[in-house]
Image (cartoon, rainbow, N blue to C red; front, top):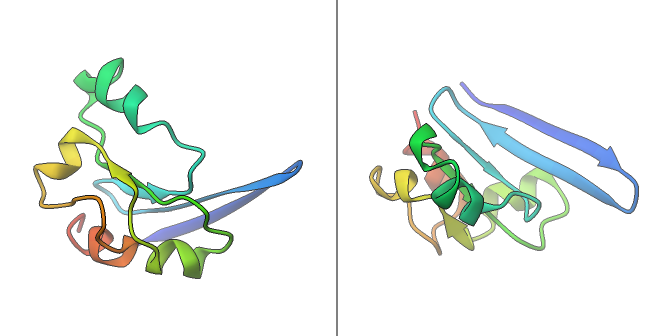
Length: 88
């Protein structure tokens, strides 16, 4: 149902958890880019900052979400886990 990935990078890690509809990710994703320059793609995504593990990503409050995610009831402040359940 969901796929979780961690990419080890120099001085940081990238983390994301996706479903067939959308995903949540660490602070490395640019929600403003999705909302502005890539708006036509209708990306459903949320961003949590300060997370260092997949478990933290699931339980952290989302700092920002895309406009398309808001159409599914996903909003800043909800946990990553709750957001993913709305992406099924």
